[in-house]
Image (cartoon, rainbow, N blue to C red):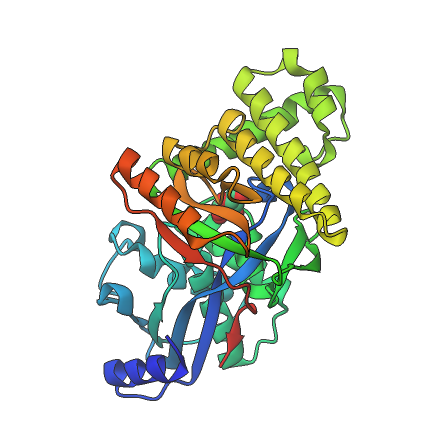
Length: 382
Ligand code: GLA
């Protein structure tokens, strides 16, 4: 997709020239999984694969959306309630517009074409990218002058309040504030962030798409959130100042193991350990110690598998198979499939990756897709 292509598509569909075009990227996450909704640290980056929207006001009050990838139309007024239409993609722009309207940002009816190349279901946050794209577009259209962190809050609200996914803020923050060739360390407690350069002269990031997406993901995700909250409740009895797992160390969790159900104990141990790992990775990046970065990624995977219990056989297989090939590897995102993220030395030959793909096919009968990552700029108007 590019500016010309989406503009042409918009003109064909609406017989009108788009007033604004926005590109909003998907994201990767180097480390810091399931920490965002626990007020912790994450280390994501925006990537080349992006959602594109072209938008114009239509002088009416109904919204008309066309999704190129599904060759599907949605018009408000036709379908109610929107959450039961099966047109899940349409809920994302509607959710974004709803959040904006709740803050007094009215647009009137919009015509919108949605396109792009973020594969849905692979854990690259195509939904956060779409919501972010719509918010940037509306901000530009009506000159609202919203700050990027404010936009990220609105985008998270769209997922939480409208779509019903209780996600954290990482995905939209990365899509809106990503910086070319940098990972972004975000403190989800106060939205402070710093950029660290990714050493792309010697290393590259590869996503291995397991091709597996379990329907469980949304319900299990919300369950994990509740388990973390239950842990905080228990820990508060001993440490009344505890606001979230961010205020807790793995040692504190271990000290109160007997007071917690086993699943709650494991979830808390993972999150507190993962927060420490993000900080250790940042330090290691600064010191150029990429072997340590990689080792911490493998440890993150072990925790996701054994303590947070969000891995599947397929991603465990991919991560284990990359030992000895990748400097670091782990399952990325919410879990139950999707992609693994792999930190790979540029000197590693393609055949090594192809070998993993062959073994994967032999074992699961699934063709593993290799998605190269280019760390890109966050959402922008073109
Ligand atoms: C999903 C959510 C994010 C984050 C990750 C897990 O991608 O959308 O907010 O919680 O899972 O780290």
